[in-house]
Length: 259
Image (tube, rainbow, N blue to C red; front, side):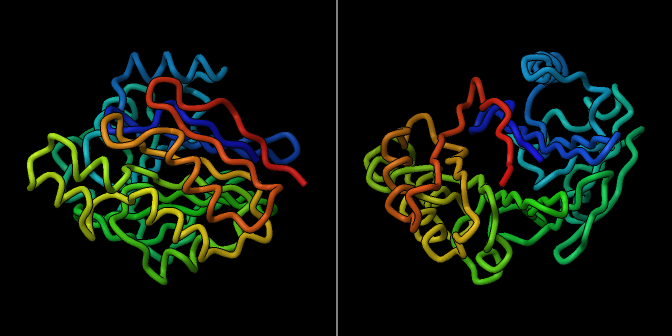
């Protein structure tokens, strides 16, 4: 099992998750906030063509996550999974695309992968994040959540790898030129996770299997890689866990999960 990012941030998000078993392999894309050509270019950088994708899985309807989903899916005949609430927000864009609904508690079997959606607090219609497994390894994904909940902490425990939002540094956001309403939205209970909040979530998780943590969805104006990395390191129980930071322009290359 392995995963890679096409880019992570307010200008666009897309994560690839791949697994193989014997002669078969499965790759899905979690969100797609880039245009068709840009997505194809970023896939090629990771050695993939659109035809290699078995599906696109959507977290919520904000444009940096869903902006390119339906045009790309329609062009390349790729099925899309999303919550019904998200569908209600984007239904006008879904014509000509094969749609599957999912919700918290479901188990999505897509080839060699199984994905489990779980609800998160965010200012969208029915936002969900995902746990992915090939039956041996587990990858947890948590971006676009305003706060921790017992439910998401339970969902993410025992992962081998974790992609965790570190959107902003609270002091940088407070001192930024953003209007007060935007600051309140970002830092609120249904906004985005601060470095401190992400560290608190990480510290609360079962880290017994954790080998990789990737800080994701960093604000270009209200955070730095150094601050996000420091916060994540402070919450780790084991020295063997590696911390990385996802980039908006480059994402990150394939990360393999193995014993």
